[in-house]
Length: 77
Image (cartoon, rainbow, N blue to C red; front, side, top):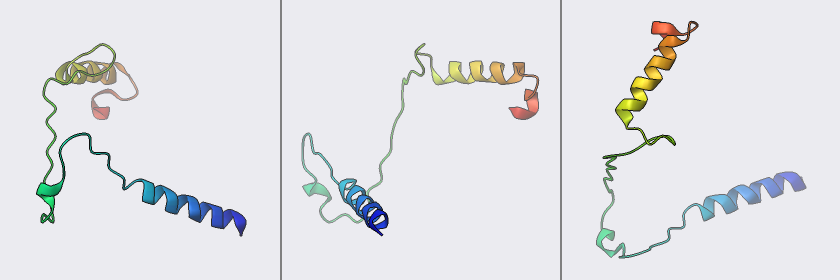
């Protein structure tokens, strides 16, 4: 029973803590009357992996790796 209560308390604490927002600049007063907000992320000029390669280069390298694997081949891609 104690373990169940502890687990339940932990879940409640995590759920309440997940709703905190730290405002670094500005305010949310503009959004006061809004019921929905559309957020779009733009990933322009993103570099991936430790080699700092572009998305296109990563996909080319990944395709080569998958096609070179005899177990996966073209069907795996």
